[in-house]
Length: 207
Length: 102
Image (cartoon, rainbow over all chains, first blue to last red; front, side, top):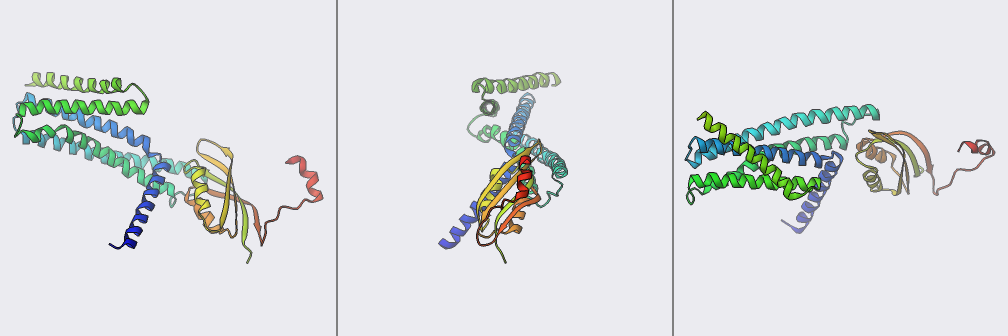
């Protein structure tokens, strides 16, 4: 690649980045994105804790079986999150745009406002879809090391990883709301422990 | 053909993009040397602004495109100045009678 082509590619990337930053600002994406990220990552971790509890009580002792269940469950939540928020955001932003058109007495279809709406819808759907998948993927990492640790130990390690994820999510929330970080983290960990406890209790009853 | 040197527009626009962004985009147009935007009215959805543009050769079409792309609509062209130099509105005896209205 010649220096001129590199410079041209650089300029093009800068231009696209500036454009996306502009859409990000116009569509006020930041707040909604943070909200959906936390909600859905929380869903992903708690679902994983539920799967771990169920697998442990049922005596599932094959790492591949546990990984398969967590992956398929996470994908299900992710796809539901992506499509659900895509359709909802599209509808909501379409409604807001039509309302604004009534105020400005002009069509906003070919404007940067419409483009920003499309950008926001897609980005929010992606965040909504990916956050539970990533959260679940991180929690199941210990099961990839069952050649080194036992499956029993992997269950516990996964549980600990999931609780650490909840703590970090809580810290993220605490930073957003300028609340005490440790307390924020502890609140989400408590929620995770409640979910885990209930799953284990009810799972034992069913068994 | 005369070149447009000053343009004053009455524009209605949504809150986003902000006046800062709009002023920035208008300032980037070829032929425009200065941009001034003043807020007149605001409600929860839209704002009414006065845009003053000065330059050597203002392209009204381009200005209109930038404003429309930002979701704004030009309600009226309140003032236009063209020619080789900028001049101000001349005072007439009739203006004295209406000065109390200003």
